[in-house]
Length: 546
Image 1 (cartoon, helix red, strand yellow):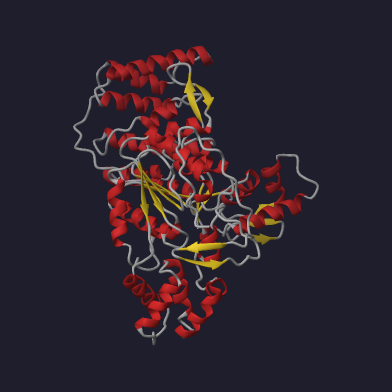
Image 2 (cartoon, rainbow, N blue to C red):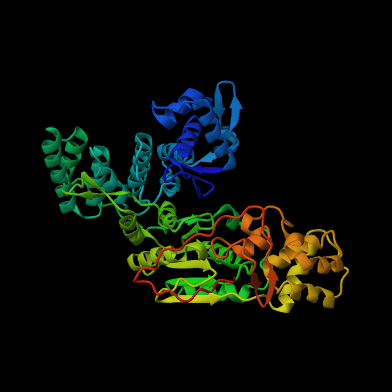
């Protein structure tokens, strides 16, 4: 499993919510496979003010860590997280940096730059740099990339060096490299201004002069020794691709949706916001995943944000920011930006939007539709024209300029092909005729999810028994397949969705053209309440399937 620590804490792309849970997980990850005692975990979580039953509280937090899928092992006196069963982005970045230094000493500049770029890709686009260790690692990555660029390999990128210079106190080695980078691009006046600002700020704030590293580079700048080397056309930087684990590789071929894939892909090239709208089980997420994979294969950046697990509209903006990155402070006062101001979530979104590119996917928006509409409107307004947003929902977002792609049930030929291919893949030997198979498809309204679940039953049931069992399709098809997200494991969870239908109502829920009675599940979350729509967002009438 992959754990991200250089930005917002996440496990396999899923944000870890809760300060105490995050504190326990960080302590276990930082131990790099060693045992962490219960007392150290108590100090990490409660900082000297533990609860009465601290041991039990730690045990409960460790249980929550295990529910994330992490194999935490209980040992005498504490816990450990086996290092061989996880990957950590900070460890990967450090390995890239060490390899880059090794090949740099051997004179292989292109390889060193490539390794440094891979390390940089593990950081958020706008890193927060809270801990000293992360700051030091980021500074090493920025230095390697700058040294390679000064030697003529790769493009100049002074943004990261500028972030390090803007810290309090400023990173003087990074400032010296930034002077060289500016001078190498023929921007000697900016380099001289940087040195003078740095000298004045150090004198005013700390009553000291710049270190020798700044003095030496200043003298070299005045002598004209920092000349620009001939640089070839910079290679294109690798696109940032963030796909959930289930989206990276399809478990089965997509059947009957090729025209939809082409239509959505073409629309994204012309429209800033495209929403795939359909009833539950029609394949909205599957279609979005295929579009995202093809976009990533074409070399464009892709970021996927899953909203199905959100319980409140207030969680939408923090979840989007956690996926997109962005610092929570900004520089104010002074040219060096040594004073910082805390940004509101809305300001953070507007600050990070101009740095985005490629495709942003928001999956399962229906239960927080109004909040998503506001966030998407703000994002598109501040982002560059190269950014496109793809949303999946049971109703449109209702934004000006939004293109709605309505996903219908499969045609009969495609529905038959889907059932037969999935049944054969599961080891079944179909013994039915086309008429009975078509009757099965029609009973399930040609909906892909229902057909997938029915095909799983056909692996060990005759088609006549499956047809007879469809009088209670929820009981027959629930949990027919393993390894699916919870909302796709049954028709009940797919038909109710999150916040669209009350699970205890006695009305019927339509799936396509047919209606069927709703069966109350053992556990059902309460329906969420949507906030009032912003004045800037037009909302159509509800298109909920229930």
